[in-house]
Image 1: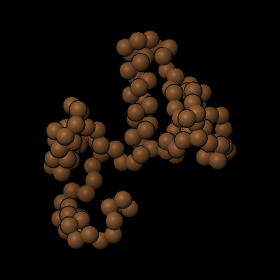
Image 2: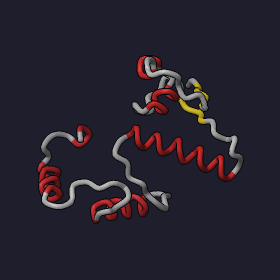
Image 3: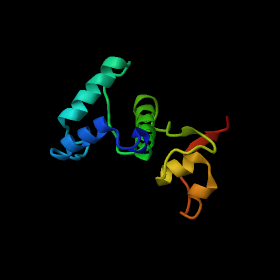
Amino acid sequence: MTALGHCHPALVEALKTQGETLWHTSNVFTNEPALRLGRKIIDATFAERVLFMNSGTEANETAFKLARYYASTRHSPYKTKIIAFHNAFHGRSLFTVSVGGQPKYSDGFGPKTRRYHSCAV
């Protein structure tokens, strides 16, 4: 929400309208606003499908999972390593803080995930 500014009248009206209907569902269900936005994204990009997430952490975690799944099922079950940027911020889940390579986010939680490589830029 912070990226949307503060109290823009069009956004306030959209929030009021949505507040009178369905607020939130998991990605197991869908709703009309999500379908409309998904269609706009597909029409404006190369994408064939859209998967909405709740946060950047969830999006990155899902991207890592999809990459590992694709590599292990299409190529080899041993292709499970991830390459991520060192000193980057990928989120606050255990896996995303491990691959980010920043001890200030990952220390103190026990052994880190080992199946990744980090690269400097």
